[in-house]
Length: 556
Image 1 (cartoon, rainbow, N blue to C red):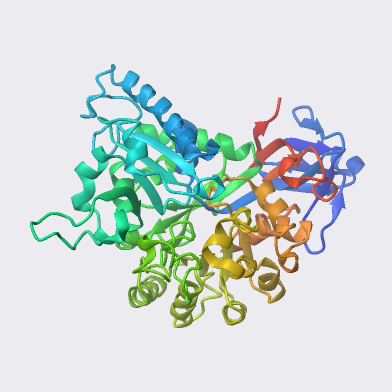
Image 2: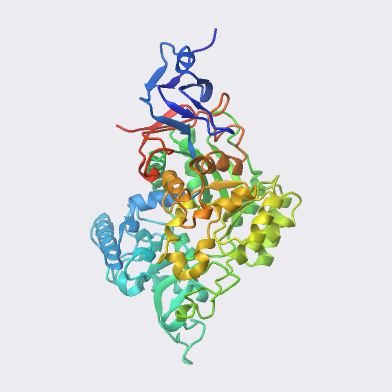
């Protein structure tokens, strides 16, 4: 006798998103797996006394979304600290930070001295109480400029204040932060009035120009380390972030982790049956020796039913970002000549230079690790492909390039020939319209960014993620199907696959995730409307999210 199902979703429009995509009326789940898909009559034969039956009332059921590039604790930070993505101007960002500063001072008992006497959630790695804000995007403001020390000194003159741009490659800091950390920051990462190099003194041992409070790349890393949450706060951040993610239909993430308590917290929550989504941890390259020492390899964990945490790739940078004008290009930035701060780096910066990258790739690949490298500009993309091509089989290793925002025709051909995964973020298309960030930085090259159609047609494995800017698969699907360059638009089915089976493939999970089929993991999302029929995919509401057969989100 066939055992009863634990969960049945019926009276639904179930899309398998396989090849071809098939549509069914119902799906049954038992012990975390899909056990039947088909007509409602046939599936409902598995209904038992304890089966939960959900009448979907015609709603659409899809495989759960897998976000192939996240910084999940950063989502939590935006929810717990100041969310600057809501700011429409520098003045609004400053006001949000002032509100956060008042909360921090109340948590300190009102002393406001920034000496680390508090014991609240803002206590960080260095023991100080910080005023932190995340997610501002000056490219959407009428006055498009970074937040400076003058702005942030108006927030607090006693507490350290940091406003992270949403790409996390640029930040604004106040004078308190500069006084404490300027000596630890590389000169190349600290911007000054007139673009004067801090290493060039005035002859009396003093800098030739004052820092503006805008810091990039390596200088931001100093702040990241100083503000890294402890275990208790990290748990709070992850709980908040996973609730946010599952409410948007996300059932799995590939999380980029560096010097963080997040892996420990993910496993703590999993052990307590409180982790609500699958987490594939991509560790930064400075963890490589530690990974080897403890015997962790790519794909360790996550193999058995209910095991939600797995080891992913070794992650590295090559270049920076378009927002910070640090993505590495072969031709100068369109707006470099007008900005004295860009005079010495008119084609961007190497965060990890090509020789160092080749050495890292050879080392990690030789030890059996998957590699994933951040590369935005065309020069950086070429450098990553150069390094991958020196390995034995980059396609079989599922080596990945993250972002791939400005790829040449030749680079796309090389992706296809090697089988390297293009892990891209369709939500970045918010910057691609005329007058947007790409237009300012790249000029006419903006229409050659994010070439999803060309990549897919060339046979390149395509995985979608958000980089948490913002986290939201349906926003990404909406933008990918309405690309500013119509020649690069995808169909709805293609975009959904990139956020399901495409992302699963990037994590070696294509046999158990990314489609709705008998034997696959029961990771599902129920949508109120059909993304194939709605006028606005980004506004489609998520009704229910299921992970490993367990309902982890249900809208009231």
